[in-house]
Image 1 (cartoon, one colour):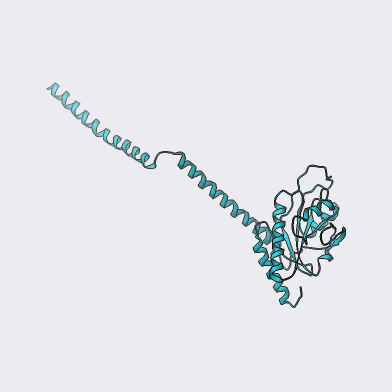
Image 2 (spheres, one colour; image 1 turned 60 degrees about the vertical axis):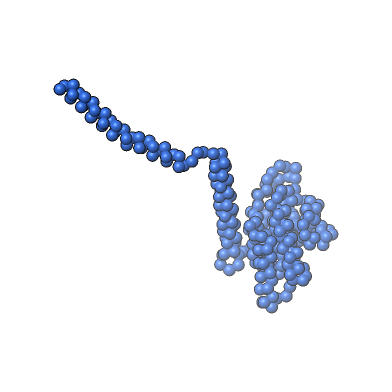
Length: 260
């Protein structure tokens, strides 16, 4: 009898053990299937993931730059009335194809024509040449559309220590043949930059042989024949964008009975 009881107990224990083990086995099987559904790690998948992430990052950075540029332009153009951009300055025009000898150049020399004005420096490695090329393209396109020269392109140096008259003369040759290059003393350049709300970081006591960086605002300005501010264009504005705005300004000028 005792032998039978021990046998029955062992049988019941074994049965319970098997029933307890079944859910555990099912959990292990389910876990294994879940991992299998994810798929094995491969370098191809990792590369695709990283490339997608890099693409999204570049896109969002580009959009962020456009938003920031738009905000900067709105800050210049959204004040009540016309922004206070432009004003008195005295600089020196470097010799060029239209000006054989250096001469004094002031805000009065802007009158009578539309002007595009860019502040930069001749040692700028990429941004200044790109913006001046863009400005030159706008001038050429408006010449074609209007059938005559209407826009005067102007480059103003914000690095007076290194941008001597001969240096500016050589520099503007690479751009539009009608471009006028202006420079002056540090105080003269500072006053011109202040008139146009242009930031620049050239040290006031810099010498031509010194090694220093120049930071500055990346805008060029459209001024009307009365010397009044019309619009500002940043790095994200294309030549087509600028040409459209220039032509609209010219048409408004004509509609008001003014001649060009």
